[in-house]
Length: 256
Image 1: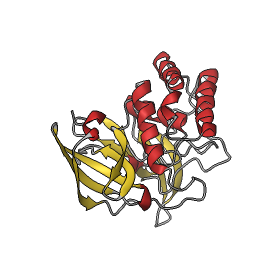
Image 2 (image 1 turned 135 degrees about the vertical axis):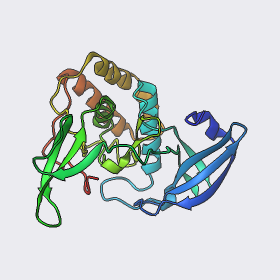
Image 3 (image 1 turned 60 degrees about the vertical axis):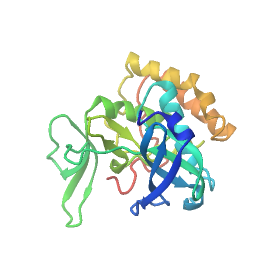
């Protein structure tokens, strides 16, 4: 019930707080309908910070487009997301995920050379005290699926903070406003499977995503949709997870 987008179609939306750590205007709210009360995240278009490389006023549409592809292709990594005309005008509305505050991290920062078994090194650097550190992430099948999804939607900002571990252990992906650009902008902390061969299940997911490209019709440009289809086709041709392109920073900042 909590992730059924049909619930968003009717009801009263009340803003109850603002997520001040977000770079764009982001509000916590409650949607009351016949189905009950649903906690949501509302991102009005008017609160979007202009970006040099993404057209103004398009981030909400990209949020919805990412959900539509996730749902249609069977990735199921993005909480239900719709466009609404809310209290502050048009914007995206997404089901809130109650995270498990006691869950072990899925992305972390450790002293270099101390990566535990079952984790991947992503990038090395220096901390505030000039000590060598490494950004790492877990070798987890849910994260692997998310990494493949990000490659398809050309996610330019997969930080650790955009990966949520729910109370039931399920891992969710949020914040997809800077995705689906026509140019290669993949920037993520989930590089652990780069160059690895796609499994049969993953090939099926990419094939389903390509077949579902019409889900993007209302939300991105024709050129961006064609670029999405080209990425899907290239992944199927290569048969492996992409490698960093070298023409764009491969890691978001800050990574966590």
